[in-house]
Length: 164
Image 1 (cartoon, rainbow, N blue to C red):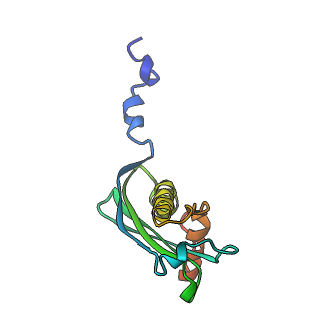
Image 2: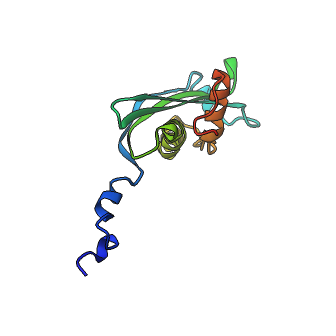
Image 3: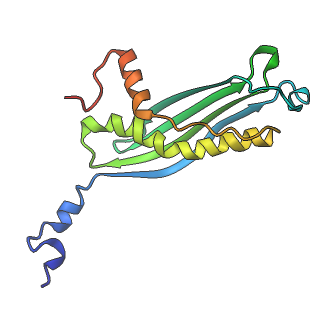
């Protein structure tokens, strides 16, 4: 009965060491900018909806064999030219620890799963900044980080990681 917890073959403890894991060590705002260039005129009620432009970029760099810094950058604006209502820029980062993940899967985890974990927090920061600037909060639509990664890989002319 003493072995029951590990399957009776003594391999339970060693097998637990090989379980893939992804841990968020820390997350933080690296840079946040909000501009309301035409205030107070821009705060008057507007007719119609202004065009909204949002750009998303993800970058990553290794910090050690298991730790990676991932930056999620959201930039956007409402309105155009002299009619710009607001502009924002957020560079939101996190440090992630990846353990027991196959080498060929690491780029997928770092460039898809890590920004997916950061996104809800970045989205809320953007919404709060815009609301605090005097506008209704802008909730950025969910982002397909897998498609963003595939697009980036295609631009670089490389086969996606994990592709057979």
